Amino acid sequence: MREYSSPASVEIPSSASLTDVLYERAASDPGRVVMRRRSAAGGAGWQAVTARQFADDVTALAKGLIAAGIAAGDRVALMSRTRYEWTIIDYAIWAAGATTVPIYETSSAEQVEWILTDSEAHALIVETPAHLQTAAKPLAAAPEVGRVWVIEDGATAGADLTVPDRPVPVEPLSALATAGADVTGEQVDQRRTSRNTADLATIIYTSGTTGRPKGCKLSHGNLLADVRNVLHGPLAAIFEAPGASTLLFLPLAHSFARIIQVGCVESGVVLGHAPSVARLLPDLTSFQPTFILAVPRVFEKVYNGAEQQASGSPVKSRQAARRGGRPGQLRGVRRCRAGGTARSFLPRRRDHRP
Image (cartoon, rainbow, N blue to C red; front, side, top):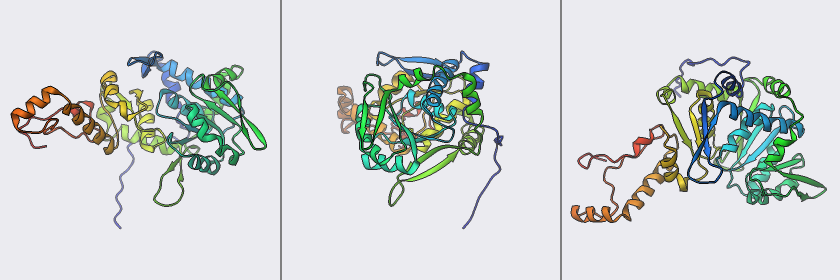
């Protein structure tokens, strides 16, 4: 077997952790826009989030986790679609010194039970009442899960889940931030700076090829080494471009999506979140990212969606009739690769080969 290796472009200090950069940027450049989140009204608009706002949101939830009894090294499971709150919760868990355990939002009750028990999770955060319902039965087999929070306000009324032998409190995520009012910023700083490259940051469960999902343990150092070497290597041009922004639509339970998220926070690229590939085309139109990163199947879906949309266009139908082709036939549409720019969805000239 042949083995190839190359020296790292960036060495990661042993004292580094994933939360360092967001607090450093909040102190040095607090007004810089680092994210854009969907408008509160739920429309097509996007609201800017500054470095200071991002750090404040992370700190508020980190305080709540500490107040709720989450200790350094504890595992906190997170079941949600890709959204702004996912990133806030992820970094808040790290700021509290704990470990994030992502669960795909499409997971079955059996899969949720396995991940909660195998990871020895101490708390669970879900997005919707449907996710809460999926997780309700598995909690009976996960005795260490003592608290549950729901991201969407109004999804719960503070009622407890009835689990054999014990009640499990269920609260909205907003209550978690309120609960940390008595925890000081110094306590959060102490907790997060106690973490370093050797400490566990996340356990990502892969589908694997046989048997149950396997938990892959990744440290702060693992993620930082991957991201910083990419940022200073093959993807430097797109991440360092003026005004760089990207729209993240892969599920954040996926390792690649996590790398994109951490890469944007590390580099200061403006990050947006899209919860569904089904709405990807209108989301790309409204957000207008300078580049997008994804797996090939996503670009195939975008290509097929554009082709179907074109097939329903009367203009395309008339053009196709004049050319002798079928309606909706997009000759030479460029199929974008992972790492391509948003502008890669432009058609080529008809005299070019596809």
